[in-house]
Image (cartoon, rainbow, N blue to C red; front, side, top):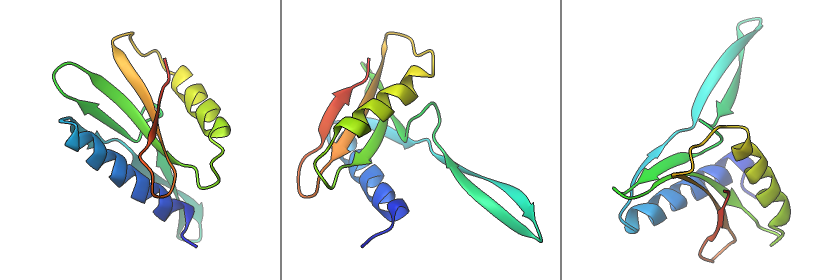
Length: 114
């Protein structure tokens, strides 16, 4: 079984490639920060910029997007968590916020989080 991190990275890559095939220019926005915990050790934490794994644009649209995997087929918790995360930020109405929910061997389900 793959780790949560490797599964997340896989679906971020698939979403980026999916949007590029649709003609978007895509940039990943996740970054890693660290803080010392003593004894020369660090805690590494991944952070999404404005709740997004990436930003895509094509001259007409700007999309902040987040990729999720649903191996069990239950998308409800992913939708509500994604919408809650986007609700924390003051996006202007012209900016789209999408969740790309991937199930194994399927095309993504795209949720508009307006």
